[in-house]
Amino acid sequence: MAENSTYPLQNSLPEKINNNKSNFAFWDNFPETQKDMIAINRIILKHVNTVPGLLGEALKDTFAFPGKMLRPACVILFGSFGPNAHEKRKELQKIATSIETLHNATLIHDDIIDESSMRHGRPSIQTKYGKHIAVYAGDYLFALSLTLLSENAQSLHSVIADGKTMQNILVGETEQYNNAYNINISEKEYLDQIKGKTGVLFGLACFIGAYESGLKVTRALKAKKFGEYLGQAFQLRDDILDYTTTSSTFKKPVLLDVKDGIYSGPLIFALQNDSTGRLHELVKLGQDLTKEQLQEIEKMVNDLGGVKRAQKLADKYTDKALHNLQKHWPDNKTRQQLEELTNILLKRSY
Image (tube, rainbow, N blue to C red):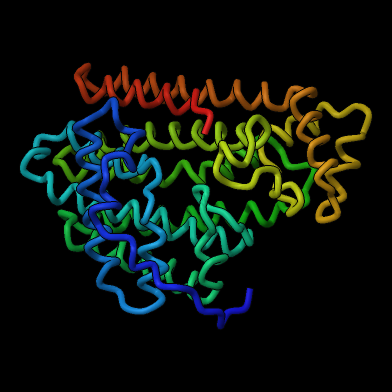
């Protein structure tokens, strides 16, 4: 799409629609957390609604229909364990907002690199507004994330942790592309990738929530470990859904990564069991893969046990996350919610 294309302004996205409770239905069973997510989304809208021009419209479009908002929820939930949870509630909400804006910045840039046309069932920012605006939108959200964090964190420790996490995310994403079209990628390399791609940001969210609510660094590091386990289980499940659901259900194109040489767990594990060589033969076609061949790959990945093995790994990381909760955190309402949330994410179909 041409970079100088113009688009109709999205002035029909008032805050009252964005913050409608129905847009946060994922949290219906957790009403207190749902209130926090609505408050966090309101903070985001307050900031992006002041940005002028096409950049502002792209940013408003980004947050018009919120996702699950799992990462800011981790900030709030682990913040509930700390001695300063009540008095720091507003600051924690703003810090959680910084995590959500950081996450969305990475998604916008991912869509540019992947040339993805869809995000959350709607046209991606780079598709709708062009790549130039998308790059600026992602950059703006990075800057907003840092501003929100630095204005509300109790010390530089959180800001440093944020910076290191961002470095790890970039390394993880880069390694994924370094392994493009590598049909011999190992399980360890894949797990390292998903830790950098997803696990470390979940880890930061849990760490920063615990630390900013008054817990010591040693305790906050236990929260970080939980988040990394949860993030890896979440990404494994995400990769499984590519081979077990449709684009309309999953709200993003599925299996297109295979054409781009980006191989996830189910495919990697199926390739290791491909005694006939047919799956290798298909995968090597890359950009030349037809719709019918992609469907054949999907069937073979399931038949060769790739999905089953990935699910076992997802179960393993879920168990690690639950063990962390039971070992290190008090048995209260917050822990019970984290346990329930962990199990819901493992079993999700979207």
